[in-house]
Image 1 (cartoon, rainbow, N blue to C red):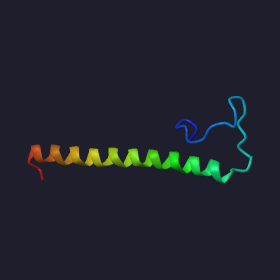
Image 2: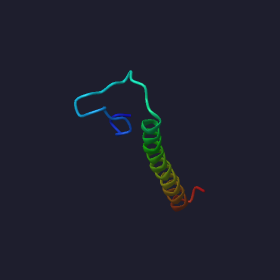
Image 3: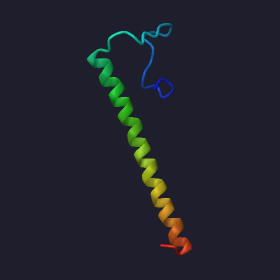
Image 4: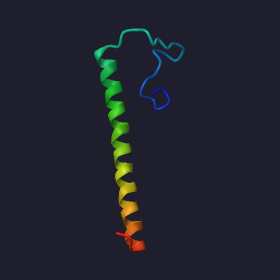
Length: 61
């Protein structure tokens, strides 16, 4: 999650994983996560379309 910038430290020098999460912080994490899920869904659909195209070219569908 941190590598995808969904979760960040409290400051540039502090990371507090045991602190309580505020509603605002939770909302930001949720919005960031949904953004990544949308991108993954779009990539999945593109892969399906490409696979169907390749199968049609090969005459296997």
